[in-house]
Length: 340
View 1 (cartoon, rainbow, N blue to C red):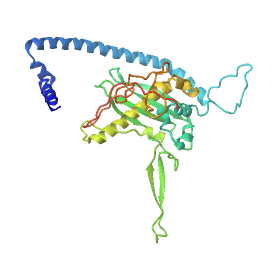
View 2 (view 1 turned 45 degrees about the horizontal axis):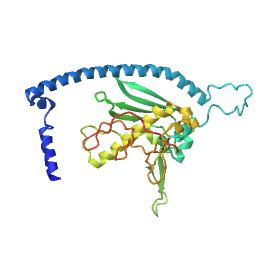
View 3 (view 1 turned 180 degrees about the horizontal axis):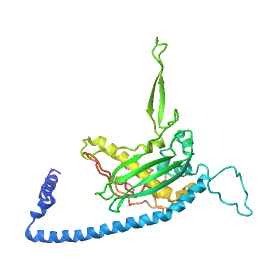
View 4 (view 1 turned 30 degrees about the vertical axis):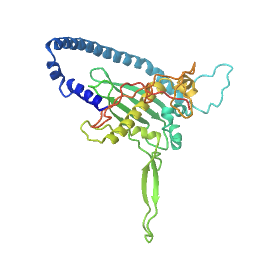
């Protein structure tokens, strides 16, 4: 093992990892340098084509987003009850005092594992006032994708004064698919209605008749913590390895949730409400190994996973501080939502 390690170290030194790319190329033998420079020219042409592809892709996405928009707006009207659907001849009328589709979006969120895991008992009543979720793509000045924004619209409710809560994911301009940061709306909770905290009262010490009980709050798990995302550290921020790995996991999970809402739940909301979308998801057997995935037709084990158990989807990498885990795996593919 020691001999193998020394060979690897010698090879790494030979590869010039301590050199700049320019120093490495200039240090190559003339006949190799000439060919490498030819490859660099080909790479430059390829990168120019890719840049054009990204520009045209962004333009296409923007065009189709405009086509989706009126459909989503009409859906919101039906869900909220501002647009009624005429009764077909021969069909029962039902209770006309009920407007729209009550608990539509809370049902959608509850039927997907990725979002259902965030929802606690106290959140349910608040989420019943959620009447719409939309997404907007953000584009950089160059026209390339710059992230996306989730827009949660609520009817007037006794919990907070906001009517709209937003969550925005910003991607770095110079790095393709690298998450720079995410931001959420500050929720203006009404007195005693904040479901993200637990209020604790401590009795005054004996002898203090006029002393008031001490009151302190403790953060608790809640769906609405989604709007207070973990902060991405600065590049030069010195963070120990363990803390960085924990923060990296939180940031990647937060991004996965946002991508799932955008790409899956908003796109096929009624299918999640009815349960059709659940049937379209890969099926996972329970038991001792809950992460073991099987093919739905022949029951054979899926061999596409890595040895470490990672699923096919990968979160977007994030900008990070010093330490292991500063950047994660690439890709904007949202995670799968498994059946409850």
